[in-house]
Amino acid sequence: MFILFRKSNTMKRSILLLLMAFLFSCNSNAQKPTKEDVTKVVKATWEREKTDFQAKCTVIINDIKFGISEKSNYAMQLNGIPKGALVTHAKIDFTQQTFHNTQTELVRRVTTAYVYKDKFKEWAVMNNGTKYIK
Image (cartoon, rainbow, N blue to C red; front, side, top):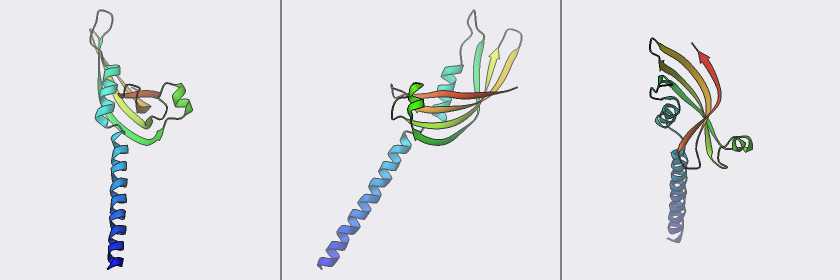
């Protein structure tokens, strides 16, 4: 009887450990950006309304691919990414439409970027390099 009781405690502990591991993995995934998060940041950065001095610009997101995620390193921190932030590498393919008086200009860009939460716990995108495609 004592052996059965002991095995059930071991079983309970194993189930508890598996449950805790699952919860921790779910929590770490919550920090990773979604395509909607990146789209919102890119549009906030690139889109603008027409003014007396600038033409109206809109952005069309063609594709977003996520790479690996890692904690920020010293070089990233020198560029303004918070220490200990989870940084996800992303390739963002988008087209910027600029509406001039007589024509609409389309510029397609493919940018590699870091996606992370800034000091205000809001998603941010830091551009590493951009390739222009006409």
